[in-house]
Image 1 (cartoon, rainbow, N blue to C red):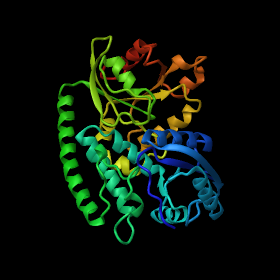
Image 2 (image 1 turned 60 degrees about the vertical axis):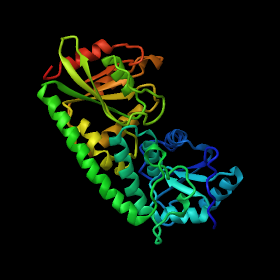
Image 3 (image 1 turned 90 degrees about the horizontal axis):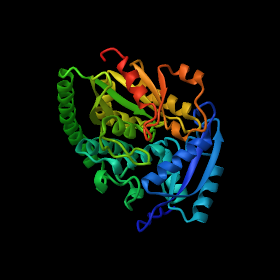
Image 4 (image 1 turned 30 degrees about the vertical axis):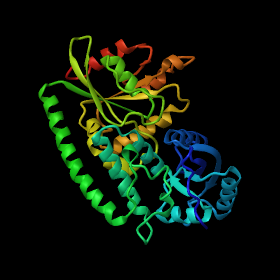
Length: 367
């Protein structure tokens, strides 16, 4: 089937595809699709429909069943869509088979998140890390001819940092990966030196971690009286920002805002963002910021711990900070706070209980 090229004079029209596999779902299918919709909107796509399927295991050829492929093709045609976004990780073969069967560009959750990172990379370090993740991902998607026909038309999956067009030639991608790794080695050394200089100041280093859009940047701004970018969208913060915070006991700490986590965070990003994520692994204390206004925030807590375990820092001292309590109609139950002890409820926006949070931080060793 001939692939349709995306119409780039407006948002790409996307059909969202959700798959529920037996025994492999922490988030409900509805929750996961709602999050996929937010991701699609953040990437600049316009979701115009969705399709779901529950399966015992993925189909080797299409991930979804052949009957669902036909149903998806009909939905794409009826909605005049030019993009299908799968809420899972597709194999290169599944990706190619789906594009041939559907006649439109197909991307999975991994590629969607990487594309968002590319759009939000503002520093040289962030751009290098994102492009490395994109290049490694694209290398697995090339056809035998060394190109990706579905990527020649532009749109999501073709944009490098700063809207530069990604390379789609295998030989050039490999050379670019080697160059990016060399550049990132320099970045890692520079960041390590800066971190060592901070350590010589004998100031406690604290990292803000949490699910994306949980309010970490707002908390950093409020505590440090700084002006870090705050946006109501997923992955607004990619580059770590460190600020001094003065505690009531007159001690000074270094507080770092880091990239937000998400369920099924692509391994390519975890690997590529090694320099950034080291701010978490090297911190003395973690403040795990939780969006308490989200109905199923414990699913998000579990997703954050999955990434922390991957980074080998789940055993670090952690204060669980339940944020956005100004949006709650009633207090969180005491047994919940006990479950995540030490824990505290706050509103980074209104400032509620921030004095108690600072007092709690001051009780930790070194303060």
